[in-house]
Image 1: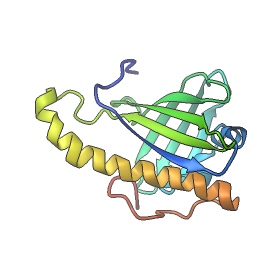
Image 2: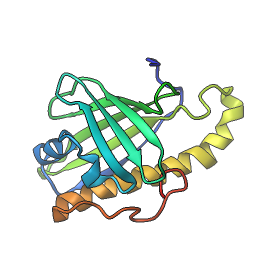
Image 3: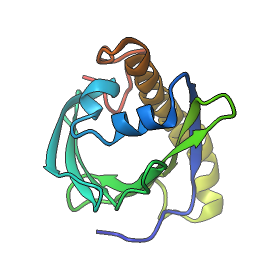
Image 4: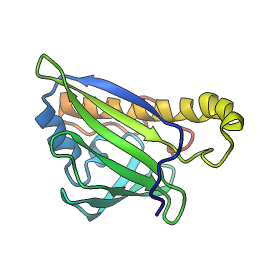
Amino acid sequence: MVTHRPPRCFSHHVLLEATPSEVWSLITQPRHLEKIHPYCKKNEVVKWGPEGCTDILLYSSGRRFIRHIEPWIQGIGYNLWIGEEDGPQSYVEWRIEPTSNGHCNLRIRIYPHLLSRWPSLLAALPFRFWVRRRLMSYLDAVLSGVRHHLNTGKSVPRDEPSSHPWFSA
């Protein structure tokens, strides 16, 4: 598995009307992606615990990614590597950021492997207008799924708020 982060990143966040401990409890549950992820068909646990986790994310599209989660930063978040088995990996950070009113932001920062081997100048435009846009809509859907589950207690409907060309059926 690759252990260096790809060169480019971006992040997206959502303000949640939940306490940091409620969000922490949700995002550290085994198989939590089945509750919050609109493009998740199945989330199979291989190993789970604060010392590190591995799970398999089967997307609605049939794509199968493995997530290797590093040891948790208790109550704050975690870092993970995600990608197809034996394929290029993207690096992702999940962070809970408390707000002054007792609620929190949940931020996901992604360092996608796409175009990471291209020279910076050559990759700049496709990254900005193709990769970034697709992954921002993906992150928005996942973060909206977290909000939906926290607000309703129900799993997010599949492909909500909209389908995704890479991950939907």
